[in-house]
Image 1 (cartoon, rainbow, N blue to C red):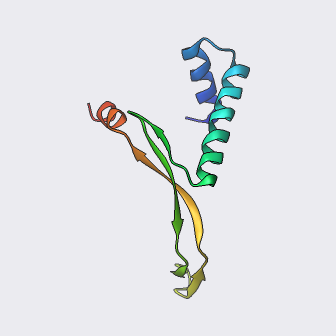
Image 2 (cartoon, rainbow, N blue to C red):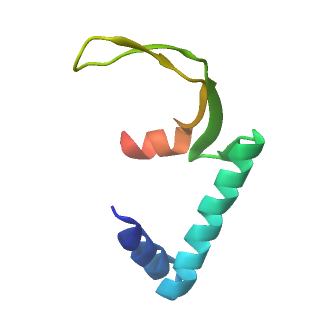
Length: 91
């Protein structure tokens, strides 16, 4: 599903215009991003949890050449599936 398809589905499901749905989706993604940047988790009960995690610096391997190269420490986001979503997906 693309962002445009998601916006259309949100608009139909919530009875909103596509412009309103786009604003709502943008506000959601901006809020999640800001929360994760602060180091806070975003918990949507029954759906899942977005969490910021820090990867330590280390060594990585270039798969093309086999050469090891240093990898800088970085932050990334993880999503842990909630029980309600897991149940919906599995039956």
